[in-house]
Structure formats: C-alpha cells, structure tokens
Image 1 (spheres, one colour):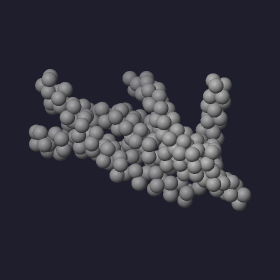
Image 2 (cartoon, helix red, strand yellow):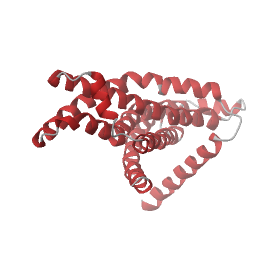
Image 3 (cartoon, one colour):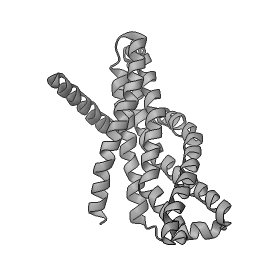
Image 4 (cartoon, one colour):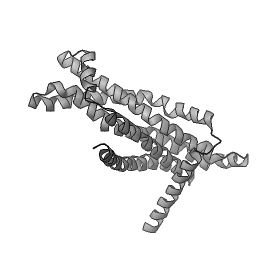
Length: 250
C-alpha cells in the first residue's frame, strides 16, 4: 500500500514537472488560456467578493471584542488589515477556489477522459496536455493573486461597514488607519504565494481528471478527490511559505 502510494506521488510529481516545462515552452495557447481565465477567474468574482465582505464583517466584530478589553479600539482597522492581507485573505481565497475551480477542472477533464474526447484530440494532432492542462494551470496561477487582492479589498470594506455601524467612522479615516502600518513586505509576498496555491489547485485537479477511470463514477470521485487533495496540499504548503516569508522578511 505504501509502495503504491509513493508511486502515485512520483507520477503526480512528474506530471507537475511537465506542467512547469510546457508552461514556458512555445507555442502558447493564448486564446484558450484567456477563455479559462474568464471561466476560472472572472466567474469567481461574485463568490470571492461576497466571502471577503462576510469575512471582513466577522473579523471586525471579533477584533473589536478583543481590542475593547485593552482600550485599543483605535487599532481595529490596522489589525484587520494585517490579518486579512498577511494570512486570512490568501488562505480563504485558496480554499474557496480549490472547491470551485478544483472540482470543476477535475470533473470536466474526467468527463473528457471517460468519453474519449482527449483521445480524439490526440487523433487530430492536438497536444492535449498543453491544450487542456497547461492552459488551465496558467489561468489559475494568474487568477489567484487577482482574486486574493479582491478578497482583501472587500474584506476591508466589510470591516468598515461593521465599524461604521458601531462608531460611525468615516471611510477615509478607516482606510487611512488601516493601511498606515502596511508595507510592501506585508502585501507582496502574501499575495504572490497565491500563485503557488493556483498551481497546486489546477495541477492536482488536472492530474486526477486526466487519470480518471470507471466511467461516471470515476468522474465524481475525481471531482471530490481534487477538492480534498488540493485543500490539504494548500494548507500544508501555506505553512511552509509562511515560514519562508518570515525568514526572508523577519
């Protein structure tokens, strides 16, 4: 059992390595990549915006209850901004999109595999790996940082709404206090690490999708396993990336 598991990990690692090589090797499928960027990125905007707003409201309420004990209510905007930008925004965005994007890619490629559509592409001299897998991975890598930035903004907006209801704080004052302690060393690494999240989500889902077996039952399993596997890998990778960021920016 352990040997078969290690063999599966090795196959997945070779698959990921091939994705990295093919992603930077011309010719590029620009039109197909843009289509997936729209499907995976633009269509995720309502989900990310709504989730970010809700997270901001909840974090603001919890932050207020904690800060009020020490008479530090004035630090609520800054505290919320640091929590959102450094950790909550990137991680929540990655987990939400691992559910939406991971399940979608796994099910779509799995269905194409069991209905032999991938074989049909190969029969007409189309590089199915580049056309189906690499385009989705590139689109996901590009979309994740943009969606994370959107979640950070809507989260701050939600925090302001919660704060304005309680204290009547103007929006200009709120955002000025929120971003005063934020530096590029807080924003840039935390946002860029979501490119790794995007690579993990799309690669895991694509690998499970193109290796689907057992008909429609296998498609459902590929979709479910894509979400579970990518979420677990994302959380584990986040721990390593946070430690690396702390080492580079102590």
